[in-house]
Image 1: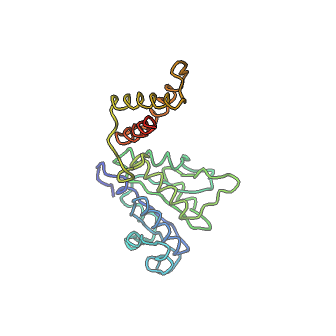
Image 2 (image 1 turned 30 degrees about the horizontal axis):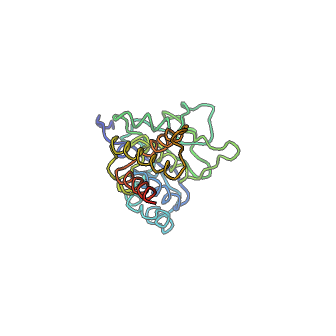
Image 3 (image 1 turned 135 degrees about the horizontal axis):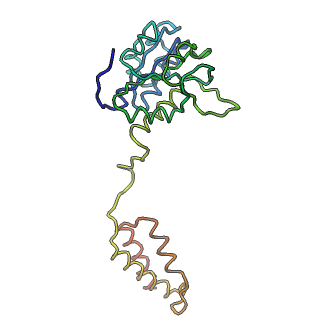
Length: 249
């Protein structure tokens, strides 16, 4: 089945596929990793644990991502799991002699985020044996997470979290959302800042910190310091208030 050609969010297009997962807790943990990054399409291929969507361990490890867990589909084959997808990526720490091109998670996420016609799937294998060769060889790419070569062992949910994070960053960018964080005042005007510098200079001369006849580089250095701060009007007023108190004394 070919998916429709439409440029929609990667959060709607990306599917996570778990093959023959042994522990229900790992399925719950993957659901949690997905939800923290905004993804929800989860498919389980022939899980080896009983009742994985309602198992107490799965629910506990999902930790609030029970909607993703409850919405997961259980199928009997990888073919069923990939219905509607047109780009498949096998995830493995083990490189194969005969395998598709090897990509990093970032290369995969960048590629998929930039092409709205792609409906990609990330395929993760069994905790102990990973993915069988025939599944890997049938994929478009093999994703290898560049971990510490001396100890590259990631558990299933850790690998899913790395992949989900990279896909989120590719989809939304890496700018920090600072809305609602701290007080955001009005930026001081150039005239206000220049007035502050003149006031500070007068105060520094008054207390003998600045020699008006031999000022050296003090004021240019202070200007350079304050230019890095993005001064707000209220901050300029505070500094001028300090200068006023110095001059009164």
